[in-house]
Length: 607
Image 1 (tube, rainbow, N blue to C red):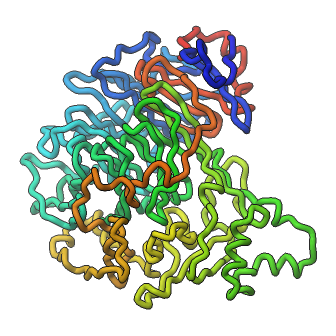
Image 2: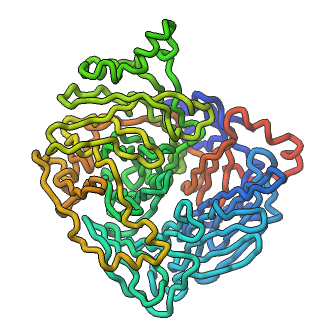
């Protein structure tokens, strides 16, 4: 097979050629044509008017060491196979389960990883008519159908996911802009549900279901305007990022049912969202053809990436290439005393703020090397890979009057990486702002990470925005399981609001800061946001105001629009609307697929 060269600038004829390999700093990724999954007849699917092809994986931990299972939808059909990945060629003649639906189409699906075994898996499937089905494709059982009579919501299901850490709770988003929390143990009732307001804020409201006995849905979320296109839970399951057709990313504290922060697309709707492995950054993509990187801690856009020529349909972080590593300066030769002085310089030189800031900013003394790898695929049939590096994450800090405390500690929950770095020490900086009404600020708890907050990097950002009170109370502790009945007595006016002393009016989302002694400070927009007026604000900075990333690679890999991007340990999985699911072996992994397997497998369509 002829391998395409790296696309040169202005590639001419090669621009329309579909690539079968690409190279990054870690090596060559190669398409394994015999590991392609599709409908058994391998015929390209006519995708006119159909819902996007989606893929879900689960590992059932069977004894053979081949525990990966794959589910994908193509048109009205749903398939469930053993996924052999880079190890063996795909055998499409033997699906474990196949279903064909009439009158409705599968739109999305999700496995419960907690309960999966070799004998049984719980798979949720959302449909174009609004229903959600719970099936077991191993036992070939259909256990329950939710919203069967479409009394809860009549619109298409856009996203369905199990709540992290739960065997029974799941969340469903619809193109109506509503989300619903279900419990698989409860019924949906035979009449339309009645709701009672639990909490509301800028462009969102959450309701509980009023009924004598506990029934689904437990909660109804009304978020933004237009369709809610996708949501994603933070790595620790405590926060929920939602992207909507109104162009807004909204990040909620899921347990407390409170808004943490927002971001607006450059234009058009946002279609996809994902979290970094440590929960510190969120990437969103959509109809502005951009990927936008948003800091969870600072609640602001820190970078945009431009490489796609059409809408971005999926964004995903590569947990196996993302790395936090010791840098050379920590391996300097010298006495133990010198080394201890280096480690404790935050305590020993507490009065030397400028000295520490300059040390932290100089590339010679930065204690860790951080690189986040993420990818995106779009309707332009292209795959882009991006690196989010130190120069973007830690630009030169402004020399402000803010007092800094620099602590050195072992990372408590390092991101999952292929190259280790788990025991490395990390320097992080938190701030105490003397001007914030004498409040004591400590580090914000980022999802999946208990390290303190980095110093805010913008002079126009109120320093208190990145700070929180030390303790956090969860409004929803133990409440969801009991049917959320206790919420009926909550007052919406419990929280007192106060103006920040210096109200930065150009940063609309920072205008007010609500506080409660035991709650996280929430960055809530208190006035209606006119989308036309968000450009140039913290919600949506101008293009020239934030770094613009260029993709590491940008390759055309399909004939039809791409709808799937999943990073696995040995490979990358992509899928296009023609119904072909492709496996790209990571560098050094291609040899795992033996030539014997390739010879015995029928040839497939290369996409």
